[in-house]
Image 1: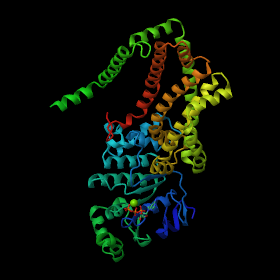
Image 2 (image 1 turned 45 degrees about the vertical axis):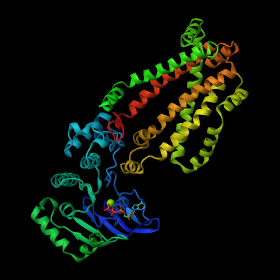
Image 3 (image 1 turned 90 degrees about the vertical axis):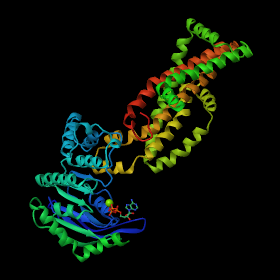
Image 4 (image 1 turned 45 degrees about the horizontal axis):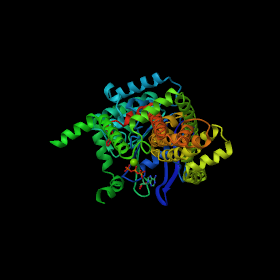
Length: 248
Length: 264
Ligand SMILES: Nc1ncnc2c1ncn2[C@@H]1O[C@H](COP(=O)(O)OP(=O)(O)OP(=O)(O)O)[C@@H](O)[C@H]1O
Ligand SMILES: [Mg+2]
C-alpha cells in the first residue's frame, strides 16, 4: 500500500519469552482515526509503540509513510528540567525555527489546551497530573503532525476537560488530514473520535473484534454516542475481552 | 518553644553558623599555640604576618599564578577527557567494558605515585604537574559521567526519538541536565584534588608555585610561613569553587527548587 495509509501486518511481539501480541493486522487510511481498546495488560501500549516505529516487532511488518509523527505517551514523559513551555517547544527541536518562534508557538498551543501564561512557566513537578497530560498533548499538536499516536491521552482529565481536548484533537486532525491512532479504556472516547476500533483480548493480545462507526465524527451527538456504546457493549466478544479484568 | 528558635537561627543565618564554626577553629588554634609554642603552632596572627611578608616580598603572586595554571590546566584536561569518555562509556557497553577497569585501576594509584612518575617522564617542567593532576582527577570525572549517562531516563530518550529530535538537542536537553547532577559534585571533588596534587607536584619538582614555596619554608624550618602557604591554597580553592563551580551548579539546578526533598 502506498496511498499514505498506516498499515501493519502479522505483528507479533514478546518480552523475555512471554508473548504480548499475536498476529495483529491493522490498517488506517490517511486521515482516518483508529481506536485500540482492550483490558489492561493486553498490549495496547506495546502495539502503539510498534505502530510508531519505536519498538521493533518480533515478526510482521509496519508501513509508516509519515514525515512528522507525534506521540502522547501513557506517562507524560516531560523533561523535569524544562518548564511547560520549554517542554512543548522541545517537540519543535528538529525544526528550522528561531528559539523565539518555537517558544511563541509553544505558548499559543498551551493556551489551546487550557494552560495560560502562569502555568507555562512552571516545571513538571509543579503541575497536576492532568496538566502534565495536557502539556504532553500540546507538545504533540504543536509540531503539526501527520500521524498522531495517543496513549490514554485524555484519561487523567475530568469529563468536561476531556471532552474539550477530544474536540481539539478532532478538529485539528480533520483540518489537516492527520492520521490518528488512539489507545483508550473509555468506550465513549472511541465512539466520539474513531472511525474504526479494534478490541484486543488479553494474553497474548490479538484482535478479537473490529468495529466501525460510520457517522462522521462531527455529527455524533450525545444521544448517538450513548446509543453506540450500548450497542457495542452488548456484543459478546467485547464482554469476553473485558471479563478478565472484571472478575479476576 | 526552644525548637522553633533553633530553626529560625539555623535557617535565617546559615552564614552566621559557618562563621561561628570558623571562629571556633581559630580559637582552638590560638589555644594550641599557647600550649605548644611558636615552633609547633605559630599563632594565627603571626601566620597572617608571614602571609603579609610573602606578599610584600613578591613571592605570593607568581606562586599563585603558577599553581593556578598547574591545577586548572590539569583540571580542565581531566574534565574534558573524563566527561567525553565517560559519556561515551555510559552509552556504549563495549566502550564501558574497555575503559571501566582502567579507570578503576587509575583511581587506585596514589596521587604521589603519579607525581613521581610524571617527574621522571616530564622532568621539572610545568607539564609534570599538569599531567599528574589530569591523570589523578580524570578517573573521578569519568566515573561520574559514566554513571550519569547510564541512568538517563529511557522513557525520555524514547520520547526524543519519537519526536525525531536531532542528536545535538538530545544531548543538550535530555542528557546534559541529568548528567550534570552527577557531574557537578564530582567536579567539585576533582577541583579540590587538582589543587592538592598540583601543590604536591610543585613541592617535588621545584619549578615554582605554592608547592615550591612550601618546600622552601620547610627547608627554612619556618612553620609560620608553611601555614601561610596552606592558607593561600585553601583560600584559592574556595574562591575558585565559589566563583566557577557554584554559579554553574545554581544555574543548572534552578528547576529543582520545590522538588520534594529539596530546599529552596
Ligand atoms: N519493556 C517491557 N519489558 C517487559 N515486559 C513488558 C514491557 N513492556 C510491556 N511489557 C509487558 O507487556 C504486556 C502488555 O503491556 P502494555 O503496556 O502494552 O499493556 P497495555 O495494554 O498498554 O496496558 P494498560 O492498559 O494497563 O496501559 C504487559 O504484561 C507488560 O508486563
Ligand atoms: Mg498502556
